[in-house]
Image 1 (cartoon, rainbow, N blue to C red):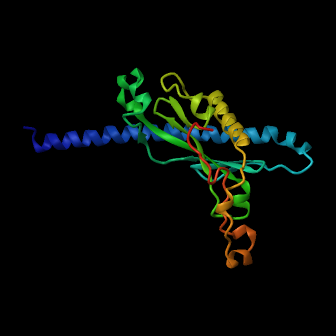
Image 2: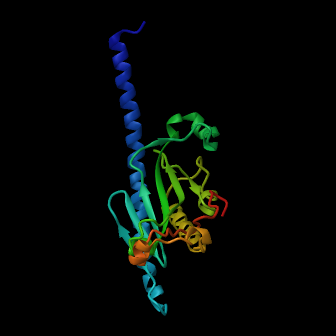
Length: 228
């Protein structure tokens, strides 16, 4: 029977091993997130002049909102990239867990996550706090810089080779372009009539900006992963 001292040593070793692993994953994810920031900022700077030819001004802006968030604004849309500060293990029933890459080293199944959210620019401009945004994709990165994505259309379909894919500048640019292209084609639909047919006197007496009529691109319509 193991002694108390042996149990304590085993516990400490487990803490060291698991904490070190999560720190590796965290710092690798943060490095990747900073590359996404750099690529997004460069994308705006190199293309801003091309949009000046438009008849009406077109919103086109990169905004750093701290260590774990940045925004990319274009036209009527905003993409918010958000890095979660925690490290997650891929669920056992996920397809990538069946790969030889994971079976050879279970530590590879621990990942950091970067989320990509799409909101309407006017939701922030007019402080419409009831408006809805959508997570259109998320990127999983392990300590070896291997990654896969989940999300809408090509965001989730083109970048799912966890064994072979590593995140370099080309991969980051492709993911960014896919997110922007999906957002541009993800148009705002008229909400169902029944969702807006009743408005209170108080709401009508306030400005339209603060009315509790929720706006979202697919509000009241079906919106599921990889259906669009």
